[in-house]
Amino acid sequence: MAIKELTFVVCFWIVCSAGHEFFSSTDQTAQLVEKKKYLLMSFSQYIDAEEKNVEAMKSAFQNLLPLYSDPVDPEEFTRDPVAAYKLLRQLRNELIYIVKHIRLSFYQCNEYQYELEFLEIPQPEDLNGAASGLIRLQEIYKLYPENIMMEMSLSADEAYHVGLVAYYEDKFQHAFLWFLYSLNTLTEYSTTNKKDLLHYLSFSANRFGSQPVAIYFCQQLLNLDPTNDEVKVQLSLYRRHHFMRTSNPDIFTLNTESSKYETLCRGEVDERTSRRQMALSCRYSTGGGNPRLMYAPVKEEVEWDEPRIIRYHDIISDREIEILKNISRPLVSRSVTKGGVSKNRTSQSVFLEEGNTVVARVNQRIANITGLSMESAEHLQVQNYGIGGRYEPHYDAEDNENERIATFLIYMSDVEIGGATVFPKVGVALKPKMGSAVFWYNLHKNGKVDLNTEHAGCPVLRGNKWVANKWIHEFGQEFRRPCSLSYWE
Image (cartoon, rainbow, N blue to C red; front, side, top):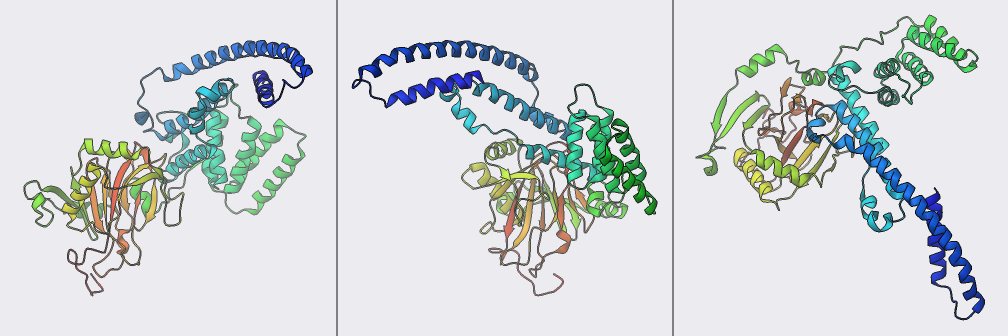
């Protein structure tokens, strides 16, 4: 604060004197002597304060340095969603801390202004989004807080934040379990206090419908402050609700009921589906006799027969994948749905034009393999999924003119757990396999949407998921995939 005040004095005097006239008044010239004395005194004080600030910055730097002394690969570190969440919180706090110390310096306007102006610091919305991703992983994969923290644990404060996000998303059971974990891990260094936790534990249990548990934690809260009339009223209300309710769901045990989408994401494939898939075939394909593939056919595997879903193996090299990633990294932004930004799709993506030779080569390879025209196709879209990244069940096509007749989805990374592409209507789950791609038609030959092509990208539980997709449109396919007037085709 002292430095800011002194800086203001120096700058104010310089700015004010810059346009002032002295030669026309000897008195004004004489007053400059006193101003010089005052300025020298301020300058001396400023130097003392700046030296203290430099010592503070050195101390801050030494405290932060050990955190980055180990050669940790950030991409490897973020394979665990809990670790990624902790890293996001840590980086936000540390970046704010660094900027705060830099801005104390009088010289930052010359040396660091550009860096500070364009420095992007994670916002509270980012932390909330990361916590929401963890909660969605718990919902899909039926995980308790202890399960999702197998590799790295959260502190009481971090768990409290995840609980708050779950609470305000009306996911009261998950909120309760995170608050309970936070309560059990409180330390003398935690900023979260027991009173707030008991408050939210009782509220979460009440909103979930577990009245005995709500009463228990509300009583614990009253024991902390027996004179709190508001808590007394709340406790009385809970007891009245308890007598009126006919059931009290178990808030400590997660519900095992799941949608078809969720069971497929967990790898719970029906036995009949597995037997049907085993009867499907693999072959080398020339894309219907394409000259470019005659001497280098692609490996084709039928993943499902109706709708026909084909996987092509080894269609893109590791080097091409890295080039596409490097092109995309500075360009990606939040992915959108037809309705704009949505919680149903948590990834960042970019459409790449054919200016790059690798992009052009991949597009040509897709045309060769599918035998379809790229005349009206969309640009190649590269996507990277976030913490708990997913794309909820959706269709790629609608009943509009020149719709997306087909989808070609390239997997640019392996994913350890989760991240499958699932088709809930037919019970098929496709695991990402780096270098492979899956292809299917979204439309029947009669132009109607194939309702069995509803699909989803499951949340990533362990790993980093990169994909590239090409949406191919109807125009230009008249002679490559002729239309049919049959209702059944």
